[in-house]
Image (cartoon, rainbow, N blue to C red; front, side, top):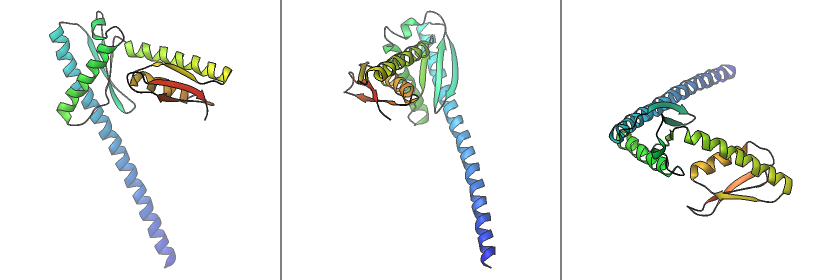
Length: 184
C-alpha cells in the first residue's frame, strides 16, 4: 500500500510538472503576443507621427528579450534623434505613453531611429571595455561621465560579462554615472 501511495505521488508530481511546463509555454506565448501588440501599437503611433511631420521612414518591429523594439529606418531622420539623442528619448516616452493609453499597461518598449541606439550601444560597449582594462591595470575605481538610464544599462551589462570587475551607478539624475571597480 505504501508503495502504491508513493507511485501515485510520483504520478501526481509528474503531472504537475507537465502542467507547469504547459502553463510556462503558454505564458511565454502570451508574453510574446503582448510584446508584439505593443510593437503594433507603437508602429501605428509612429507612422501617424511621421505623416504629420511629413517624413519618410520604414518601421521595423521586433521583440528583443523581454521588450518590444521598434526602429524607424530611413534618411533625413536626424531631427527625430536630436543632438545627443534627447529627441529620440522624448519620442520613446511618448510612444510608451501611446502604448499605455491603448493597453493600460506600462511598456518598456525601446525605440531606435536611424540606427542611433545600435551605434551608441557599440560605442558604450567599447567604453566599458576600456574602463575594465584600466581598472584591471591600475586597480583603481573608474568613474565614467554621467549617462542616461539606457546608456548605464549597456555599460553595466558589458561589465557584467567580464570576470573580476563590477560596476554600480552613483549620484542623482541627471548626473548619475557608472563606476567600474575590481570585484566579483
